[in-house]
Image (cartoon, rainbow over all chains, first blue to last red; front, side, top):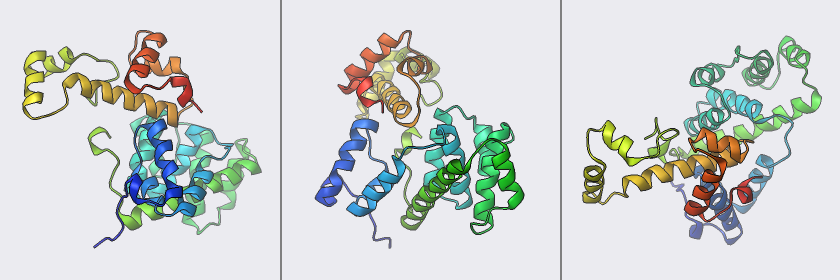
Length: 175
Length: 92
C-alpha cells in the first residue's frame, strides 16, 4: 500500500495553501507533483524557488534538459508533462522522442546540450571531457553550465518524488 | 477534440465527424449527465491558453493565432469571459 496521497488544499499545512491558489489562478489546475510536495511547506517553497529562478537557458533548452533527465530516470509523470511543455514550445513529437534518447541532432547547439546532460548522468556526475568541450564550443559559458546543473537537480527532485509515490498523470482526459 | 480543437471551435464540426446533428450530440451528452459539447470545446481551449501563458514566452497575439482565433481581440474577450481574468494578468 502506498501511504502517500494527493492532497486537497484543505489537507495541507496552512502555509502551503497559497501554492494551490497560485496554480489555480495561473494554470487552472493543481499539478499532482506540486500537490504532493505541498504536504511539506519547506518542501514546496524550496522547490518553487528553484523552479521560478531567473534562468539563462531558454524554454526550449530547459525542456531538452528535463526530457533527457526524466527519460533516463524513466519518470513517466515528468516525461508526460515535459513532452507537453516541449510541444507548446515548438518541438515536434519526433524531436521529443529523439531527445529522450539523449541527442538532438535537429539542432547543433541543442545537441551539445542534450549530450552533455546525458553524459553527466551516465557517468555519475562526471561529464565526458570531449562532450563538455563541444558544449562550450557551441557558445555556452560557465554560467549556462550552472543553469544546466540546477535544471538537472530540479528534475532529479521531481523524478524521485514522482517515481517514489507513483504519481498519476495530471488530468488524463486532456493529455 | 484533442486533434482538432486548435482549428475547429464549433459543435457542428465534431457532430459532423460523428455523423450526428449538433442537437443529437448535445442530447446524448445530456442523457449521460455530461457537460455540453460546447462547454468541453471551450474548456479545452482555455486550458491550452493557460498552458501557453504559463509554460511559454509566446505573446497573446501568437497564442490567439495558435488556437484558431480570427483576431487577438476575439481571443482576449473569450478568455476574459471564460476565466474572469485578463490575459495580461497571467503573463509573467
